[in-house]
Length: 482
Ligand code: URP
Ligand code: ZN
Ligand code: ZN
Picture: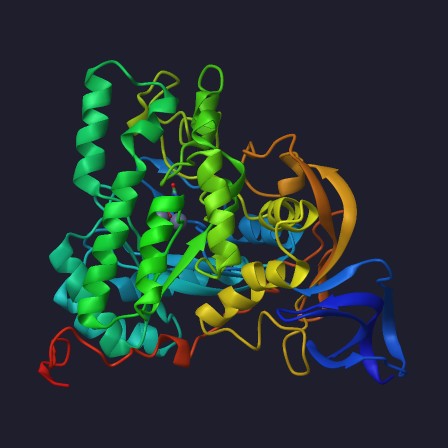
């Protein structure tokens, strides 16, 4: 046999273009793309289907602590959900809690992730930026492949104040790591929420009032300024609407290495979803909150302009009908006591394809860039991931662009008891998903083996090389003249 597998007769979609081609696979890698004559142990007829690089989801919370509650996906269930939705690589979090050693936590996450069905890597979440963590632990952890750091500007017990943010930015620059930021103004949100609750506005819908877009815009603008002062590349996570996106566009126009991610929830849900009957709105509590339909259209514009170049899920699941989930503080809990976060791994590609390609907002190569190639490039995984080309991993989603599927919780294959997208009519759905040439979703169910997923260490890459420009001739990170 010449090959292990040939995918025949499909339309191969890459980040640049699309054309009819066969794809040959051997040893878990793509070995040829084009008109292929050889024989293979298995052939897949992909006529009428799109053949795309598997999704790369660079914002996924799995098996993490949730204050007082429980995150309902392990690496096994979470990556089953990934496979079911066409995602073949996830970047999850090694999540430090106050007082913990980041090195010990990361070693523990490596153990937990051994049950993964798809390939994975880690961001390092720093919540306690001690000298030991930044000077003694971080260099080794980045060197061994966790080449991105996540920081929060809000949430009690997790957020960093501005002086800690500066120290993390400096450490990231020294160690050649990308910093990813949850940007919302903490004090404004706390104060606003307190006023709302005191005034009796406690229902889930007031979550959006407690976290107004100005809180996000201010924090985005502040972190951009701090990163500019220290010359550190950053990615802003989950941009929710026009105002923060505008700040990012301005920074990019100044030549700064500031990148942006949005998520399907900001393109499909609005603050009105928080106003569903009874406590149902809790299913839509996440931060920053979903905004307005005008914000959705603005985000599409920023996507088309290339200002926002990544669409991740921010999969952050807790159960709805569960005292360790959304009902942690009871069914009448004020909005600010409801755990933040929603599931979204399996729904990411179907939602973006439907809203983007099927509704004519973007073309298939743009879709591939948003969900696969750009995140792979942004996090140092390309061209091994995010490409269908000789020598790239044979991570492939065979996609039926016409298939109509009504999303249900059962189709999410996750550990949760709900999907915020229940009843959503998707047009375009995966029919088969391969990770390194092995089928993990066959169109009828998840067939991948827990443990098939491999850890992806990430080396330094040019995209996150600092610019070498500071506001003055002084380089404050290395304490020397430029
Ligand atoms: O509400 C959200 N997004 N929860 C997940 C954690 C985060 O903020 O990214
Ligand atoms: Zn966040
Ligand atoms: Zn998140």
